[in-house]
Structures are given as C-alpha cells and as structure tokens.
Image (cartoon, rainbow, N blue to C red; front, side):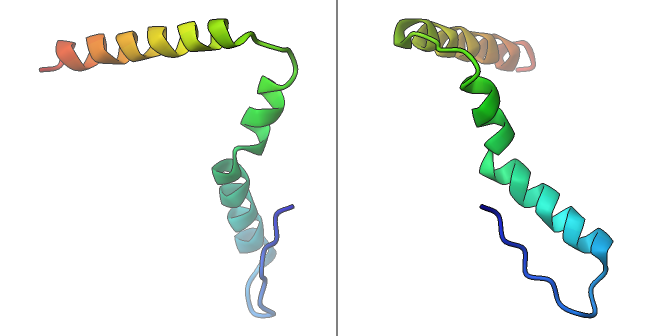
Length: 63
C-alpha cells in the first residue's frame, strides 16, 4: 500500500504527482502484468539472456 504524506499547504496536483512517482518506483503495474500468465523459469531465463545480448549489441553499435 502506498502512503503519501500531504501537508495542508500542498496542492492535490503535487500529491498526485508524488503518488504516480511512488507507484512507478514500486513496480506494481509491472508485477501485475507479469502475473497475468505463468512463465516457466527456463523461458524467463532465455528472455533475460536475449535482452542482455540485444543491449550488448546496441552498446557496441555506438562505440
């Protein structure tokens, strides 16, 4: 559960902005999307390796 401390003088817009930042940092939406379908550990690991290879290629391209 996300808790935002709001002072009397601060506006609702600032409180919403703080809430959105905390929500993104907590990774709640990302976790919910990941839990929609089960992914085997081997598939998850394979995807991580493919992402790492892709990132490596992109970094080499700009060197």
